[in-house]
Length: 107
Image (cartoon, rainbow, N blue to C red):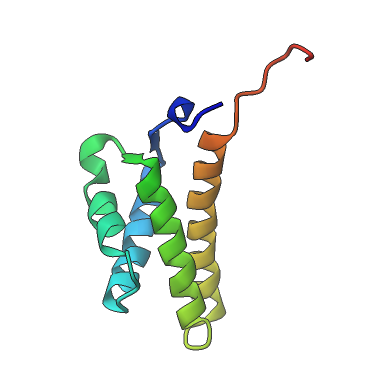
């Protein structure tokens, strides 16, 4: 299976996109490398029915994990859990796109 057979975009729930945008704003303020591109995309996601390029979602997940690492000692545990939770939801969505569809037939 080649990478061209994978989806290039994915549609996320509106609430996840909104949470990701909020956390990406924090990442951009803390100058986390690469946070600007996904921030712009997630801010504009409502205009595209919350459909985003897979690479942008993957980049956003990475930025949020970096943000969580950098702020782990300075934020409340609930804030840290929320940031990590959003990052993991984004990462899981990307991984689901890359997994081949399951079939009901045996090999």
